[in-house]
Amino acid sequence: METDKGSGAASVESFHPSAEDIEKWMTSAFDMARDALESGEVPVGCLMIYKDEIVGKGRNEVNETKNATRHAEMVALDQLLDWCRRSCLDPSSVCEQTALYVTVEPCVMCAAALRLLHIPVVVYGCRNERFGGCGSVLDVSSADLPQTGTTFKCVSGHRAEEAVEMLKTFYKQENPNAPKPKTRRD
Amino acid sequence: MEPQMKRWKGSAYDTDSWVAYPVLSDEQSQDIELTDAFAAPILNKRETSRLVRELNSAYPLNGLQHIKRVRACREKGGSYPLEVLVCLRSDALHIQAVSIECLLPPGMGSDGLGEPFIVKVPARPPLTRPQFEQASKHWPTSFHEDKRVTVALRGELFTPPQKATMHTYMMSAVAAAQAAKKMGLEAVGAVVVNPSTERIIAVGHDCRANHPLHHAVMVCIDLVAQSQGGGCYSLDKYPACRFMSPTFDTLDSTLDVDLKSQPYICTGYDLYVTREPCVMCAMALVHSRIGRVFYGTTAADGALGTKFKVHSQKDLNHHFEVYRGVLSKQCESLHE
Ligand SMILES: [Zn+2]
Ligand SMILES: [Zn+2]
Image 1: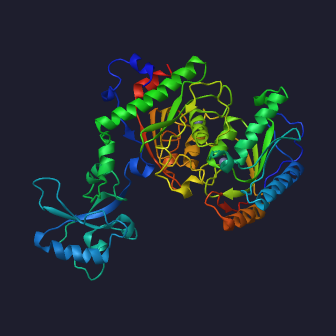
Image 2: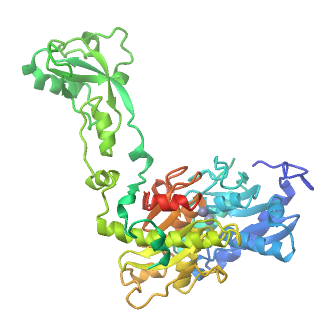
Image 3: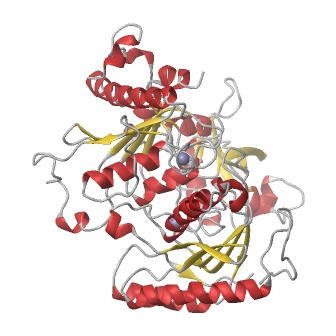
């Protein structure tokens, strides 16, 4: 796993979460995923962090909205935008300094959405072999798409086995919907 | 019918002004791949079947069953009328001096064959007629033709009445795009249709001034969800974004209860969109299990043909047909 010490009040260029940030926020993301699993939902935890504050927290809302695009990341991005509105902050300058912590690699759609909002860093646990947009199916995170926002950096593999286990448990219970997991360590 | 339609020159059903072409997978649309092989003239035509039998057992064309072993000689007036494929170049890499004696395995007499020469043969079976025609220029190749693909590539898949229907749907998408443009939004419109009932289910346009992710396709998907009692976008300030509440005749009798309980809300539906969707929207259509997509004009980062072909991505669990060029002129002119 690749981490960078001493980011703190970093410029946009060097914006990168510290090892402590990753540990702390991934713990919260895994707690969310476990809660979801225990209530029979897709076990994906997802947090958007701006200046050490949770500005978006999503869970999969596909079933209740009947909208197949309501993945945890999309819900969290909407919360982030609402938070900016309430805080009277410019969304683009907030997004540039916001990191996403998520237990499973974002899908192709969510990866594109993160690009469109110029989120610079995504920290995730396990790979998503079925839909992954950070290299597993397509590499949207780094593809040359000048009209589709900006590329983002991925930090992957944090507690990957655990994320896979949760997804496997969920599979056994039901459903063709969940992302197919596979551990990634790189 | 939309009043905007009358503004277009000629008839509202001027379906001759556009052609819908399929956006095929890379495997179907790329140039054929060639590989080097050795061929040799058959000196005596009457020995052809023996030579083919012996070569088939010495050098079976594994995985290259689409290649014919023998071809009629190209140059008229050449000394020998038939040529046979001896082996692939990769079968004979160890051979230094290339002569027919060296190429043939011990035990197989070289009599009956002339001096070998290099030819190019197609490495994979052709999938489309253009690929077949390209392949056949190099070496005779067999082809299991998908007639539907051939007709589609000629732009002749849809009958004039079908085109007239497609025309009206895309006109609604164009009208939505114009409504967006008037409000200072990006001029992109989309329509979701149930082709089995020929009813429009949702009409939407780009709303990214309001929300950076509310592209026309995302808006339409949420409107379809709204038409089924779900959805979560608030689109009140955009009157051109709307859905039709299903009446009992459109309540999907075609879908079984199992499917309805899943959020695959666009199963069996078609999308008409004025501009090729981006990668977010293309993947959203995969998640929603769209049936077919028709678009007017391409986009620089488009994900249904230009940069990616998300609809034919092998690793994904849902694939759909895509056609481009529907009302291409009207759709292009939205961006002028
Ligand atoms: Zn997603
Ligand atoms: Zn889009």
